[in-house]
Image (cartoon, rainbow, N blue to C red; front, side):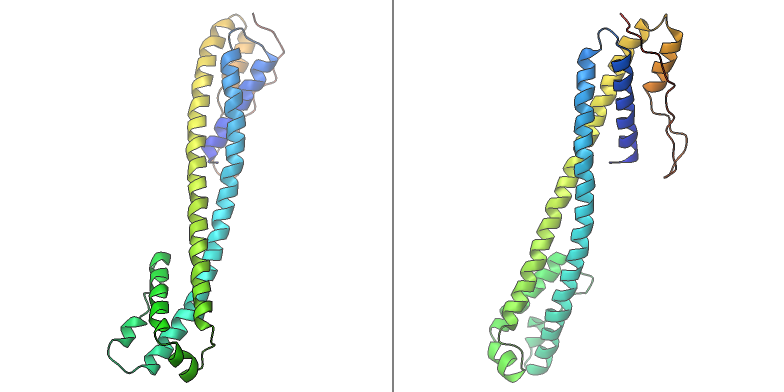
Length: 227
């Protein structure tokens, strides 16, 4: 959840609290809307936090799997092939992409190397001494990285959905508060102390930026049922 969304959620909760303690006729419908918004934002905030953490974890896992695929399979096979085959074009079959290439390019190259190696298994195993299951290990490393890539994509999709939902809920909450303000102000016009408290409650006041930012607390107000 962004800073603005957290501020909006605090604002919505304060409006709820004020109008629960100081009941104003005609506000029940929009208070229900605000209640739904607060519940939805709380749930989506948890989801967004979870997907952010998962994305970071998957990024680290993906990097480790990519390094393993590159260092333990692709580079050794390419180097061995360069020495094992002295025919034109063989180096192209086991060509390595740029190390900084994206995962899709790395996976495509790795799959191409597997196909090339399948045609010369006996050379790699009997002549060069690679384990008999070297291709199975290579394919497993490719599958792991591919699965991790797909998992990260899905996690990012969930995070994007949560962001969009939080934005929509924030807009819905702001609209509800604006309507409530239009209803409440005329009914509190004869009660200046309560009206002042309402004006403070209905907006979040940021007293500074950064991690140490403080949001002003509205003054304590008497509990009054307003007809």
